[in-house]
Image (tube, rainbow over all chains, first blue to last red; front, top):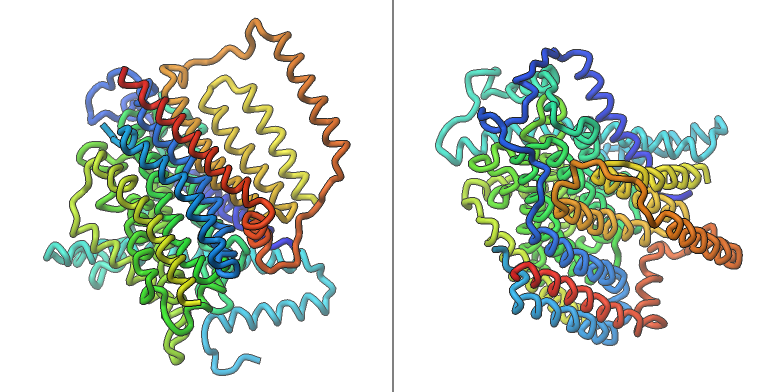
Length: 117
Length: 351
Length: 162
C-alpha cells in the first residue's frame, strides 16, 4: 500500500470542502452587481491605469537567490537523516558543501545584492 | 477492548481495529478500507479546523483586547460575546460575491480554493496523539514545507487576478517575504532532524520522551523557527503584505464573502500548523504527564505558541521592507547555518 | 496504477495548455499544475523524497521565479501573445529530433515501476547514504554548481544599476 494515497485523498477532500462551501454560498447569497460596485477598488477614487505593469527587478533577484538556497536545503535533508550514523566524515563533507555556498552568500552580501533598495 | 479510555488517540486506534475486523469479515478490499479510513479522518479534521478557526478568532479578539486594556466583544453575542465569531461566519456566507470587471475571473475564483489545500495537507502529518495522525509519512515535515510553498502561489494568484494595484503589491510582497523566510524555517528544523535521524513525525515525538528539544542546544533552532514561522504566516511584525495603512488589506482586498473567508481561514489554520509543528519538534508533541491525555498536552502546547504569536502582534511594530529583507537574509540565514554546525558538533560530542 | 495514469493525463493536458494559452500568466499557472502532477507520478513510483523535492523546488521556487519574471516583462501579462512566429519550421524540426531521441532512450532503458525500499525511512535515508558514499564528489560539485548559479544571479542583479 502506498502511503501517499492519503495525500491524494486529502487533496480531493480539501477541494471538495472548498467547492461545497462556495456552492452553498452561491445558493444563499444575494447578487446585485452594478457598474460602480464592480469597479477596481482604489480608495473611492477613479482608478488610474491598470495594475498589470512592469515590476521591479529586485523581486526577481531574491527569487533567484531563493532557488539556489532552496536546492541547497534539499540536499541537506537526506544528509541530516544519515548524519548520526556517519559521524565525523559527514561533518567534513558538510563543511566543504556549506563553505562553498557561504562564500557565495558572502560574495552576494559584499556585492550588495542582498540590499533591498 | 477499550478500557479506561485513555485518550482520543487510543479511541481512534480502537475504532480502526474494529473497522478492519469488520472489513475483513465482509471481504472489503484493503484499498477501499484505507480510503474510507483516511476520508473519515479528513472529515474529522475539517470539523476540527472549523472549530479551531472559531476558537482562534475569538482568542485573537480577546487577547488583543486585554493587551490593549479593553474588553473586546462583551455585549453582542451573549456571555463575553462568545457567539460573535459564529455570526461573522454566517455573515461571510451570505455576503455578495464581487468580482471586479477588470479581474481575471477564473484565476480570481480558483485562488481561494487553492489556498485551502496546503492547510489541510499540513494537518495530515501533525501527530495529535499517539495514534492520532493522518499518515505517518517518511518525508513527514517536508510535506508541510512543500505544500506551504503552494500557498505562496495561491496568494500571488489572488493578488494578480484582482488586477488592482494594492492586491498586486500585496501579493508580490507576500511571495517575496514568504520565500525569503522559508529558508531559515526549513533550515531551523534540520537541527532536530540531525539529532533524531529521521523525518518521521512519530520518531521525532518519541525521541523527546525524556527531554524536550527546547532544553537542548536546539533552543537556537526553536527561536529561529518561531521568528521565521511568524513571517511565513504573515503575522505582525511581519505583516507587510497586508499592511492596512498602505495596502488596504493586501492581496485579498478585492475578495468578499466566502472567498475572502477561505483566505482568512487558511491564515488561521497556517498559524495553527506552524504552532503545532513547533510543539511537535521542540516541545515534545503529545508527550506529557501520564495522567493527562496526549491530545490535551499537545493542544495546550500548541495554543501556548499561538498565544505567543498573538503576544508578538501587540509587542512589536511592523518592520520596513528593506529591514525585513535584511533581517531574513543577513541575520536569520547565517544564523541557521551556524545552528546546523553547532548541532552537528553537539551530536558528535554526545555520541 | 490508475492514479499514475490520472497524473500522466493531467500532466499532458497541462503541458499542452502551457504552450497554447494566450495569456502568459495562465501559461505559468498551468506549468505549476504540470509540475505538481509530475510530483504525483513520482509518489506513485514510491520515490517519495524526489516527489516532495519536486514540489518544494519546482512549484515553490522555480514557478515563483517564473511569475516574477513575467511581472518583469512590461505589459505582456495583459497582452495576448502570438502563438507562432517565423521560426516555425526550425522549431518543429528541433522538436521532432528531441522527441525521437527521448523515445529511443526510453526504449533502451529498463522501465522501473517502483523505487520501493524495505527501509522504513523510504528513499530519504538511502539517498543520504549514497550522497555520503558513492556520490560524495557529485554532492560537493553540486555546491559549486549552485555557487555558479548564485554568482550568475548577482551579475544579473548588478546590471540593473547601469
